[in-house]
Image (cartoon, rainbow, N blue to C red):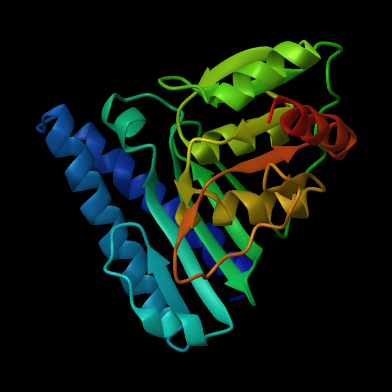
Length: 243
């Protein structure tokens, strides 16, 4: 099984497990989020350690093992990206299974279980054409200042959405054109989405235009930009202009 096949399979199966947990209807909102996180993390970490025992592993829900820093290949997973949306029975949450090779998000899959969709690096699809008025996905609860200011400067419509994975995949699905985030994330929030976005020909970088680097000792990632390549230069210039 190739790395891409493994990532897609695990993301899809994990998503189905999470839907089953949610469908039980026996848990409170808070308990549902915790149960989903625990179930998904146990499944993904066990499967990856069994299938790729020589690779490193970094998961949001697992204690970090510094040994990964010495490894070239490191799986970076977010068992439930958008726990809040998952618990609220919304569709804008995701499962991330990404593989960073020498610090670069290279292989991965993002499952959107609420939509029955898995997007992967080895089967890029044609991205629908952009409309005349650009659309920028932002947090539905706390839109970042830079994002709202840039959107105003370029005349883009704001599209509130939940998880980072859902936002990034919205561009691939033709539901948005730009994902600009400056509110702080972690490596597991973007590794798989960035790998998939790059495979589909999108621009992915920090908001100052520098590369996104994974498998770092400090897994905090302050910001990122994912967008169609033709919009990158303008968006980066506007970010620089607002300081």
